[in-house]
Image 1 (spheres, rainbow, N blue to C red):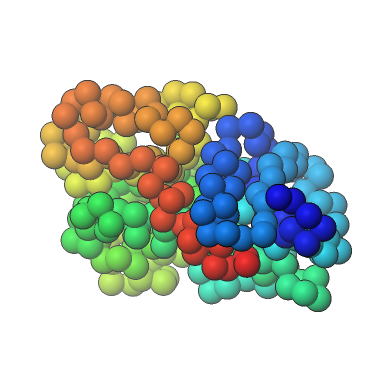
Image 2 (spheres, rainbow, N blue to C red):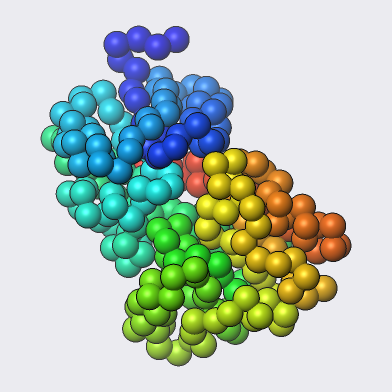
Length: 261
Protein backbone atom coordinates (compact mmCIF):
# COMPACT_ATOMS: atom_id res chain seq x y z
CA UNK A 1 0.00 0.00 0.00
CA UNK A 2 1.27 3.48 -0.89
CA UNK A 3 1.29 5.84 2.09
CA UNK A 4 2.85 9.16 2.94
CA UNK A 5 5.96 7.27 4.00
CA UNK A 6 6.42 5.49 0.66
CA UNK A 7 9.63 6.36 -1.15
CA UNK A 8 9.61 6.93 -4.90
CA UNK A 9 11.97 5.69 -7.59
CA UNK A 10 11.39 7.57 -10.87
CA UNK A 11 12.30 5.74 -14.08
CA UNK A 12 13.31 8.54 -16.43
CA UNK A 13 13.37 8.30 -20.21
CA UNK A 14 11.81 9.52 -23.45
CA UNK A 15 9.73 7.87 -24.67
CA UNK A 16 9.02 5.97 -21.48
CA UNK A 17 6.24 3.75 -22.86
CA UNK A 18 8.66 1.01 -23.91
CA UNK A 19 10.51 0.88 -20.58
CA UNK A 20 10.30 -2.46 -18.82
CA UNK A 21 12.01 -1.19 -15.65
CA UNK A 22 8.96 0.22 -13.78
CA UNK A 23 7.15 -3.12 -13.80
CA UNK A 24 10.25 -5.15 -13.03
CA UNK A 25 11.39 -2.82 -10.24
CA UNK A 26 7.96 -2.86 -8.61
CA UNK A 27 8.02 -6.66 -8.66
CA UNK A 28 11.43 -6.60 -6.98
CA UNK A 29 10.29 -4.00 -4.44
CA UNK A 30 7.23 -6.07 -3.53
CA UNK A 31 9.27 -9.26 -3.25
CA UNK A 32 11.72 -7.52 -0.92
CA UNK A 33 9.00 -5.97 1.24
CA UNK A 34 10.21 -2.41 0.55
CA UNK A 35 7.93 0.57 1.23
CA UNK A 36 8.77 2.08 -2.14
CA UNK A 37 7.26 2.38 -5.60
CA UNK A 38 8.77 2.80 -9.07
CA UNK A 39 6.96 5.18 -11.41
CA UNK A 40 7.53 5.99 -15.09
CA UNK A 41 8.65 9.55 -15.79
CA UNK A 42 8.50 10.55 -19.45
CA UNK A 43 10.80 13.57 -19.59
CA UNK A 44 11.80 15.09 -22.96
CA UNK A 45 15.35 16.35 -23.31
CA UNK A 46 14.42 20.02 -23.12
CA UNK A 47 12.68 19.48 -19.76
CA UNK A 48 15.45 17.38 -18.21
CA UNK A 49 17.41 20.21 -16.48
CA UNK A 50 14.25 21.53 -14.80
CA UNK A 51 13.23 18.02 -13.76
CA UNK A 52 16.63 17.37 -12.18
CA UNK A 53 16.48 20.71 -10.36
CA UNK A 54 13.10 19.77 -8.91
CA UNK A 55 14.36 16.31 -7.94
CA UNK A 56 16.76 17.91 -5.46
CA UNK A 57 13.78 19.15 -3.46
CA UNK A 58 11.66 15.99 -3.80
CA UNK A 59 11.98 14.79 -0.20
CA UNK A 60 10.52 11.28 -0.59
CA UNK A 61 12.47 10.60 -3.79
CA UNK A 62 14.84 7.67 -3.30
CA UNK A 63 16.40 8.28 -6.67
CA UNK A 64 16.21 7.84 -10.40
CA UNK A 65 16.70 4.94 -12.76
CA UNK A 66 17.75 6.39 -16.11
CA UNK A 67 16.92 4.89 -19.50
CA UNK A 68 17.56 5.97 -23.07
CA UNK A 69 18.28 8.64 -24.23
CA UNK A 70 19.21 10.53 -21.05
CA UNK A 71 22.13 8.53 -19.64
CA UNK A 72 24.80 10.78 -21.12
CA UNK A 73 23.00 14.07 -20.47
CA UNK A 74 22.38 13.29 -16.82
CA UNK A 75 26.09 12.83 -16.17
CA UNK A 76 26.50 16.60 -16.52
CA UNK A 77 23.43 17.48 -14.42
CA UNK A 78 24.05 15.58 -11.17
CA UNK A 79 26.18 16.84 -8.30
CA UNK A 80 28.59 13.92 -8.05
CA UNK A 81 29.68 10.95 -10.14
CA UNK A 82 31.08 7.60 -9.07
CA UNK A 83 34.33 6.53 -10.77
CA UNK A 84 32.38 4.18 -13.06
CA UNK A 85 30.03 6.95 -14.14
CA UNK A 86 32.85 9.44 -14.60
CA UNK A 87 34.82 6.98 -16.70
CA UNK A 88 31.92 6.13 -18.98
CA UNK A 89 30.45 9.63 -19.13
CA UNK A 90 26.96 8.29 -18.44
CA UNK A 91 24.70 7.39 -15.52
CA UNK A 92 21.84 4.93 -15.18
CA UNK A 93 21.04 5.33 -11.48
CA UNK A 94 20.93 8.51 -9.40
CA UNK A 95 20.74 8.50 -5.62
CA UNK A 96 19.19 11.46 -3.79
CA UNK A 97 20.85 12.10 -0.43
CA UNK A 98 18.92 13.50 2.56
CA UNK A 99 20.38 16.96 1.90
CA UNK A 100 19.16 16.92 -1.71
CA UNK A 101 22.41 16.13 -3.51
CA UNK A 102 22.21 13.87 -6.53
CA UNK A 103 24.87 11.17 -6.95
CA UNK A 104 25.12 9.48 -10.34
CA UNK A 105 26.32 5.93 -10.77
CA UNK A 106 26.71 3.61 -13.76
CA UNK A 107 25.74 -0.04 -13.43
CA UNK A 108 25.03 -0.95 -17.06
CA UNK A 109 28.54 -2.14 -17.77
CA UNK A 110 29.06 -4.21 -14.65
CA UNK A 111 25.51 -5.52 -14.91
CA UNK A 112 26.02 -6.58 -18.51
CA UNK A 113 29.34 -8.33 -17.89
CA UNK A 114 27.95 -9.92 -14.74
CA UNK A 115 24.94 -11.23 -16.65
CA UNK A 116 27.24 -12.75 -19.28
CA UNK A 117 29.35 -14.48 -16.67
CA UNK A 118 26.25 -15.74 -14.86
CA UNK A 119 25.26 -17.37 -18.14
CA UNK A 120 28.74 -18.92 -18.51
CA UNK A 121 29.67 -16.52 -21.32
CA UNK A 122 33.17 -15.26 -20.54
CA UNK A 123 34.29 -12.04 -22.27
CA UNK A 124 37.87 -12.49 -21.07
CA UNK A 125 39.95 -13.75 -23.99
CA UNK A 126 37.11 -13.22 -26.46
CA UNK A 127 37.04 -11.31 -29.73
CA UNK A 128 34.23 -8.80 -29.27
CA UNK A 129 32.33 -6.52 -31.64
CA UNK A 130 30.33 -3.78 -29.92
CA UNK A 131 27.64 -1.88 -31.83
CA UNK A 132 27.02 1.65 -30.58
CA UNK A 133 28.84 4.51 -28.87
CA UNK A 134 26.11 6.14 -26.75
CA UNK A 135 25.72 6.14 -22.98
CA UNK A 136 24.93 2.44 -22.61
CA UNK A 137 27.58 1.42 -25.12
CA UNK A 138 30.24 3.51 -23.36
CA UNK A 139 29.57 1.86 -20.02
CA UNK A 140 29.59 -1.60 -21.54
CA UNK A 141 32.75 -0.83 -23.53
CA UNK A 142 34.68 0.08 -20.38
CA UNK A 143 33.40 -2.99 -18.55
CA UNK A 144 34.26 -5.28 -21.45
CA UNK A 145 37.71 -3.73 -21.84
CA UNK A 146 38.30 -4.26 -18.14
CA UNK A 147 37.35 -7.92 -18.40
CA UNK A 148 40.38 -8.70 -20.57
CA UNK A 149 39.13 -9.44 -24.09
CA UNK A 150 41.49 -10.65 -26.78
CA UNK A 151 40.12 -7.91 -29.04
CA UNK A 152 37.48 -5.19 -28.81
CA UNK A 153 36.12 -3.54 -31.94
CA UNK A 154 33.42 -0.87 -32.01
CA UNK A 155 31.06 0.32 -34.74
CA UNK A 156 28.64 3.23 -34.77
CA UNK A 157 26.63 5.08 -37.41
CA UNK A 158 28.62 8.25 -36.62
CA UNK A 159 32.37 7.74 -36.61
CA UNK A 160 33.38 10.61 -34.30
CA UNK A 161 31.89 9.13 -31.10
CA UNK A 162 33.63 5.81 -31.78
CA UNK A 163 37.01 7.46 -32.31
CA UNK A 164 36.57 9.42 -29.08
CA UNK A 165 35.58 6.29 -27.16
CA UNK A 166 38.49 4.30 -28.57
CA UNK A 167 40.93 7.01 -27.47
CA UNK A 168 39.51 7.00 -23.94
CA UNK A 169 39.56 3.21 -23.73
CA UNK A 170 43.14 3.01 -24.96
CA UNK A 171 44.18 5.58 -22.35
CA UNK A 172 42.49 3.55 -19.61
CA UNK A 173 43.60 0.15 -20.92
CA UNK A 174 46.85 0.69 -22.87
CA UNK A 175 47.63 -3.03 -23.10
CA UNK A 176 44.31 -3.98 -24.73
CA UNK A 177 43.68 -4.47 -28.46
CA UNK A 178 40.98 -1.81 -28.91
CA UNK A 179 40.04 -0.09 -32.16
CA UNK A 180 37.22 1.21 -34.31
CA UNK A 181 35.97 -1.57 -36.54
CA UNK A 182 33.42 -2.45 -39.19
CA UNK A 183 30.42 -4.76 -39.23
CA UNK A 184 32.66 -7.15 -41.17
CA UNK A 185 34.48 -7.85 -37.89
CA UNK A 186 31.46 -9.96 -36.94
CA UNK A 187 32.78 -12.69 -39.21
CA UNK A 188 35.49 -13.66 -36.71
CA UNK A 189 34.04 -12.38 -33.43
CA UNK A 190 33.20 -14.62 -30.50
CA UNK A 191 30.72 -12.11 -29.09
CA UNK A 192 28.64 -9.46 -30.88
CA UNK A 193 26.83 -6.95 -28.67
CA UNK A 194 24.10 -4.57 -29.78
CA UNK A 195 24.33 -1.60 -27.41
CA UNK A 196 22.06 0.65 -29.48
CA UNK A 197 18.29 1.18 -29.24
CA UNK A 198 17.75 -0.46 -32.63
CA UNK A 199 15.35 -3.35 -32.18
CA UNK A 200 13.35 -1.77 -29.36
CA UNK A 201 9.61 -1.21 -29.45
CA UNK A 202 10.14 2.46 -30.31
CA UNK A 203 13.02 1.88 -32.74
CA UNK A 204 12.34 -1.39 -34.55
CA UNK A 205 14.88 -2.88 -36.89
CA UNK A 206 18.06 -4.89 -36.88
CA UNK A 207 21.48 -3.28 -36.33
CA UNK A 208 23.59 -5.75 -38.33
CA UNK A 209 23.03 -8.14 -41.21
CA UNK A 210 22.68 -11.57 -39.55
CA UNK A 211 24.44 -13.20 -42.49
CA UNK A 212 27.68 -11.58 -41.25
CA UNK A 213 27.59 -13.52 -37.98
CA UNK A 214 30.00 -16.43 -37.59
CA UNK A 215 28.53 -19.87 -36.80
CA UNK A 216 29.87 -19.95 -33.24
CA UNK A 217 29.20 -16.33 -32.28
CA UNK A 218 27.26 -15.40 -29.15
CA UNK A 219 24.88 -12.51 -29.89
CA UNK A 220 23.85 -10.21 -27.05
CA UNK A 221 21.39 -7.32 -27.04
CA UNK A 222 20.86 -4.56 -24.45
CA UNK A 223 17.27 -3.99 -25.62
CA UNK A 224 14.84 -5.43 -23.06
CA UNK A 225 11.52 -4.62 -24.74
CA UNK A 226 10.92 -6.73 -26.67
CA UNK A 227 12.96 -9.41 -24.94
CA UNK A 228 13.43 -11.28 -28.21
CA UNK A 229 14.54 -8.59 -30.64
CA UNK A 230 14.76 -9.03 -34.38
CA UNK A 231 18.52 -9.45 -34.00
CA UNK A 232 18.21 -12.18 -31.40
CA UNK A 233 15.46 -13.94 -33.34
CA UNK A 234 17.58 -13.89 -36.50
CA UNK A 235 20.64 -15.14 -34.60
CA UNK A 236 18.65 -17.92 -32.95
CA UNK A 237 17.28 -18.83 -36.36
CA UNK A 238 20.86 -19.38 -37.49
CA UNK A 239 21.49 -21.63 -34.51
CA UNK A 240 23.52 -19.08 -32.55
CA UNK A 241 23.46 -18.62 -28.80
CA UNK A 242 21.75 -15.40 -27.70
CA UNK A 243 21.72 -13.23 -24.58
CA UNK A 244 18.84 -10.77 -24.05
CA UNK A 245 18.75 -7.31 -22.51
CA UNK A 246 16.36 -8.61 -19.86
CA UNK A 247 19.27 -10.53 -18.33
CA UNK A 248 21.33 -7.33 -18.11
CA UNK A 249 18.45 -5.53 -16.40
CA UNK A 250 17.79 -8.35 -13.96
CA UNK A 251 21.47 -8.45 -13.01
CA UNK A 252 21.23 -4.80 -11.97
CA UNK A 253 18.01 -4.69 -9.97
CA UNK A 254 19.52 -5.88 -6.69
CA UNK A 255 22.38 -3.42 -7.07
CA UNK A 256 19.98 -0.59 -7.92
CA UNK A 257 17.82 -1.21 -4.85
CA UNK A 258 20.90 -1.48 -2.66
CA UNK A 259 22.05 1.87 -4.06
CA UNK A 260 18.76 3.71 -3.63
CA UNK A 261 17.10 2.27 -0.52
